[in-house]
Image 1 (cartoon, one colour):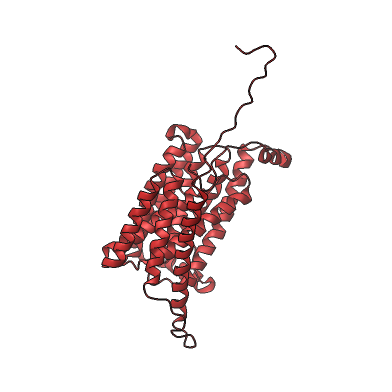
Image 2 (cartoon, helix red, strand yellow):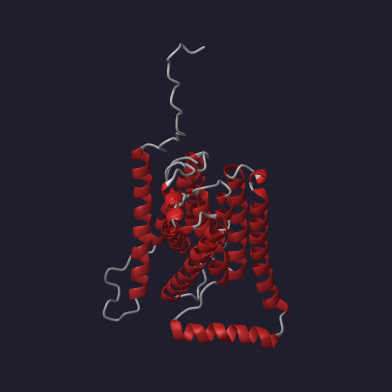
Length: 352
């Protein structure tokens, strides 16, 4: 029993671990930056090798892109395991072994498997590295950070020089990434019972859009009416001829809006993690955007840029609609709500 006049202890705020030691983060980000630099040098030298004035001057060694890819996927594996409370050294070690084996053994299976692993790990980490966004502009920032991580994974996947059927490669990587991210989000989002009715509806719609898009594209390719398929392809070719590339519908309609809206919802409710999970519908296509041997760097970059711009615009509209339906009314109410206390989460590189 408290003594008369004694004051009650102040409630403690939720505390989270600050993450791994700074020296470890510096080391692994150094590995990631070195691997990215190696891949960038290899890509630039490859693009300039066809220029007569440049020739072989400054050409990167043939082994550099493989080493850079191994460095990137190993560091991304460590970062993902650290972020999701996994065994970081074990994950990084397995990625290192598979990556080195694919370089030494070669063939078709190991390099392709290493490329798939790179796309999956990079795409899932791109979603996991985001933090809650109180405002729409901060949600846009988080989507851009996820896209940057996916772009690094795209160069690393190419570094393994996989032998792929592009459509099959993308579908396999997307399904594996979706299974992995849903398994992680199941814990972060307090299971299915924490979704609520609206969350269940949104998740069902997201799954429906994802699988309907994949099934529809496959049916069109195999069994669709030739006239309709030709008109769709002709429109895509007509657009690409004028602006350089055609945006990815799955990225625009589902992936980027899910990331933007999901990070915004996470600032208020943990169900936002379930919405963020569908961000792999953007990060996987961005990470696999260079594996096709017929895709040039410029075309892939323009396709990603157009998809990002359109997806960010759609995500911004979704946030505005959500706030209009469920948020406080008026500009003053929204500003007060943004300045008020929000759901806490660990820092960007700390364990979730």
